[in-house]
Structure formats: C-alpha cells, structure tokens
Amino acid sequence: MRRWRAFMGLSGLERRWLVQALFLLPLTAWAIRWVGLRRLQSLLEGVTPSRFFPGAGLDRPTDWTRRAARMVEIAAARGPYCATCLHRSVVLWCLLRRHGVDSELRIGIRKQAGGLDAHAWVEHAGVALNERPPVAERYRPFRLAFPAPKPNRS
View 1 (cartoon, rainbow, N blue to C red):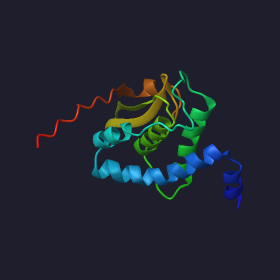
View 2: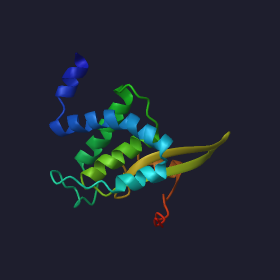
View 3: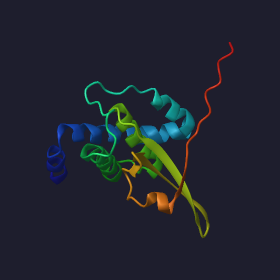
View 4: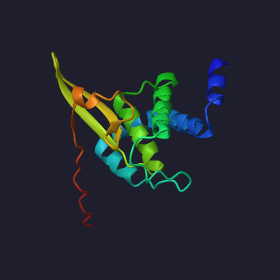
C-alpha cells in the first residue's frame, strides 16, 4: 500500500519513466546477451526523439534528467529483475534519447587487486546522471567507438 501511494505521488512523466524502465530493464539485459551491446546501441540510435517532450536544447543536466535517472534506479531496485549498471545505463540513455537529450553511454575500467573492474554510467554535458560525480576519477572511461556497418552486398 505504501509503494502504491509513493507511485501515485509521482508526476505523470515520472510514472511513465518508471513503468518503461520496469519493462526495458529485463528486455535490455536479454538484448545485450543475445544481440550484443554494439548492435543494440546501433538499433537504439535509430530511435527518434518524441515530439511531445523535446530536450534537444539542453546544454546541462536539469532536474528532470536527474529524475529520469532516479526512476531507472527505483525500477532496478524495486522491480523483479536485478539489473547491472550496464542495463540501467542503457535504459537511461535510451529514455533520454527518446526525449531528445544528447547523452553518452560511458563504460570505464579500473585495476583491482584481483584484476579489472568495469562500470557503466550515462553522462550529459560531462556530468554523470546515474552515478556520483567522481565516477570518472574512479574508473577510466573509454569511448564506445563502433565501426560503421558494412554494406550489404546482395
């Protein structure tokens, strides 16, 4: 009952983001596993921004970009699916892209005692939206540069 009241206390846009994230988190995990991150990101880059909520003019993170990140985090924490940082970041990146916000999916690595540790997050205007700010200091980010698809020669 408390969760329902909390859900109803959200704005309409926040509820929509939360429901979309609940649906997209397991779908994204499946897609990364079976299609691969490179191909999934290429497919998602074709998603056209919504005409109803354009954010193309945003040059810095705003309250609603941070709320979108928060809704994805709530969906990951309260939903039935245990999502990794990569799944959460891909979903947030897709939701922001859908609303016309130019953002970057970042993946970083760092050396740990037992080997390498990796982490994913989303940046908008150089600011991490779904992670505490010094994330780029803890993990060395690398650019996700994917080669252009090869032309079909049929």
